[in-house]
Length: 312
Length: 232
Image (cartoon, rainbow over all chains, first blue to last red; front, top):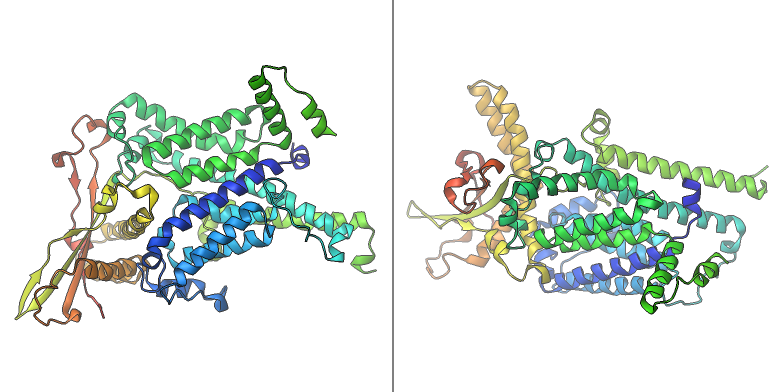
C-alpha cells in the first residue's frame, strides 16, 4: 500500500492547499495590522523578555527588534508579501521557508495568542515548502536548476525522495493530529459519558450562534454529537488512507469542521483543516472527479479522454 | 573507494535509507510527544520541548472541554493618607466575548491571550493543590502553600497577566481626573481568576444564565495576588 501511495501524484491537492494556506496567512496578517503594536510591539501585551528568552540559543543573531512603531507592521507587510509570492509559487520552497520563519518570529513574540490553526500552519508549512506543490496555480519563471550539480541524477533522486517524504510526512502529520486528539478524548470522563459537547458548546469564549444553548438542552443531540466527533477523531487518521473510504471520511470531516465553524466560531481552524483534505486526493482522482462533474453538467457520458490523457 | 565512486543505484539506496531513517526518527519523536502522558515522554521531556519549540505539537483540542467559564478581573488600588482606595473589579474578558466584530479583527487573539494565561495558571494551581491535599494542616502546609505562590509568580503566564494589567491600567486610567499627584508606582494591582462552573449535564434543563445554577469558584486566598505595579 505504501509503495502504491508513494507512486501516486498529489500535486493538484498540494497546489490547492498552498493557495488556501497563503490566503489564510494573508487574511490573518491583515487582521493583525491595526493592532500590530498592541499584539507584537515591544510595549505590547506580551512581555518582551519572554520573546528574548525564547529565541536565545537557537537563533541568537536574528532576534527581530519590534522596537519602532513600524517594526511589527513592517514584518506583517513582509509576511503578506511573502504569502502572496508563495500563493503564486514564486520562489517556491525558499519563499515558503522565509514565510515559516516570519510566522515563527510572530508566535515567539506572542506565543499566548496562538490557536489550533496557527499550530497546523506551523507544522504544515515546512512540509508544504519541500513537497511538490508548485505544479498548478503557479507563475513560472525559468530560473530553476541553473546549477549544474543539481542536474546530476543523484541530486535529482535526492530531491524526488525528499519531496515524496515531505508529502507523506504532511499527510501523516494531519492523521496524527486527529488520532492524538481522539486518544486524549477517549481517556476522559466527559467524552466517555457522551456529554462533552454540552460543555464545549457552552463556553462563553466559543458561543457563536444562538443555537448553542437550545441544542445542548437536547440529550440526543449532545450524545450523538459527542460520540460522532470522538469516532471521527479516532478513525480519520486510519481510514483516510483507504481509497474507498477516503471521500466519505473527508465529507465527514468537512461536516465536522463546518459545525465547529458555525457553533464555535473557530473559522481559521476549520478552514485550515478542511484545506488539508485536498492533499489526500491523487491527481488521478481529481481528473476523474472533474470529468465526472463536467459530464454531469453537460449531460454527456463520463469523459474517458481525460483519464487516458493523464495515464499517458 | 570513495562514496562518489559507488555505482549510482547503490548510492541511491544509501540515500534512500538515510532519508527514511530521518523520517522515521522524526515521526517517532512526534508520536512520543503527542501520546498521552507516559514514562518515556516524561523522561525525555526537556529534549522534546526543545525539539518542538518551533513547531508546536499540542493537539489536545477540547480534550477535555472545560466545564467552566473563565473570568478575569482586575482591580487597582492606591493608598492616600494611610487609607486604601480601590477601584471596582474590571471584567477583562467579557468585552471581547461580547464583541460582534470578532471574526474580522484580531481582537479574539487578545481574549485568547488572556484566556490562555488564566487557563495555564489554573492548571498549575490545580496540580499543586493536589500535593497540598496530601499534607496535614500545619507549618509545613503553610510553607508549601507559600512556595506554590512563589512558583506561580515565576511563571510566564503570571508575568504576562501582570504586564497586561499595566496596559489595562493605562486604558481605564481610573484616577486621571483626581490630579492629586500620586505617583503611579504607588498603585497596587490585583487580579482574580474566577471559574464559573456550568450546571452539570443532568441539570441542563435549568436556565443556564440564572446565576443560581452556576457554581462560583471565587477563591480569594488562592488567586489573590497583590503586587506593586511598575507602571513607569
